[in-house]
Image (cartoon, rainbow, N blue to C red; front, side, top):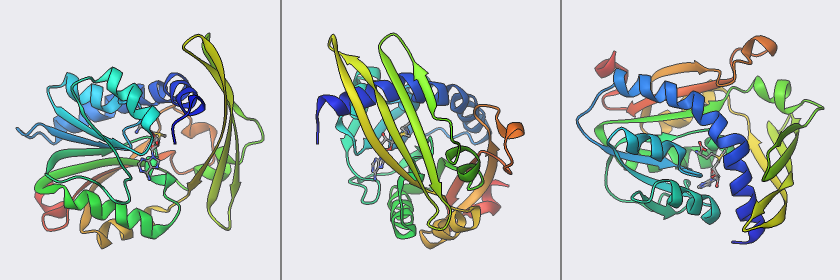
Length: 257
Ligand SMILES: C[S@@+](CC[C@H](N)C(=O)[O-])C[C@H]1O[C@@H](n2cnc3c(N)ncnc32)[C@H](O)[C@@H]1O
């Protein structure tokens, strides 16, 4: 579905959340590209959103391809990285052929998959577009962060000249399900458009994620504690996000350690 309201959400997402997150992610990606060099230059960004990771890879001389389920998000990505290949599609059934040297899926996009089977299907899709020397970089929220941050009574707010977002979150521990009620507005083409959306996320433990990776033929080479907003000291959580570096299982840990 494509409507002005979705355009407004994509615009406000980019301004209020995406760019802030990517400032921290950029530093880590720089480090990982240095730590795991390759002469190949094909990059795939899954759930690419507004194209921030593709813009970064492009600036480093890579050829990015992006997949996202949201057409308004892809339209912003198109403006940001005009020469990227962009595909509207679902990461649970990747509509791609070919192989990519580095694959990313950032900003806890995989937490949007609410069933373990969907996570396995996404990982299988990734395995299907990897060569023996490809690597997959992704982050997911540490499960401790849901009761600590998503369970907070206070909503997150962001105000700019052309947008306002208020995100009220709740967490249902037994179902491991988090809900975000997103309200606000953004100015699109001179008109203020109302935003009213609901987003769901599922908490996965590191063990569940590693199990799903194994089922898909992937193995973690490194798992990094990632705290993009330096908030780990303020919350009772082991870490904020888990950032995985994964390889196809046939090579796995041994080749890269
Ligand atoms: C939190 S945003 C992250 C966007 C981008 N990776 C970034 O770092 O800014 C989550 C993105 O996942 C996309 N998404 C959620 N579920 C998806 C699915 N099943 N298939 C493809 N994209 C999906 C949304 O449209 C949205 O663009």
